[in-house]
Length: 57
Image (cartoon, rainbow, N blue to C red):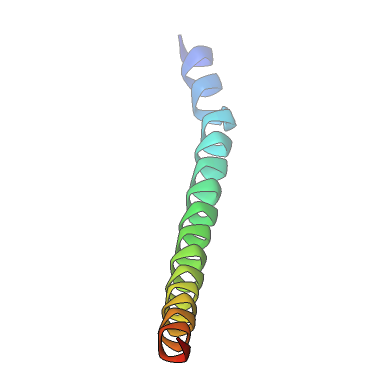
């Protein structure tokens, strides 16, 4: 029984999976933030184009 408990304590495969999961989550948050920032800029650009086209016609 003691050997089983020691083997369980020394097993780090679950910790590695959790670390990879956290890294993937952080990358996803960074991608979402970048898309939101670029999306806002693109929206403003297209609004300005629309305003200019309306003024030209």
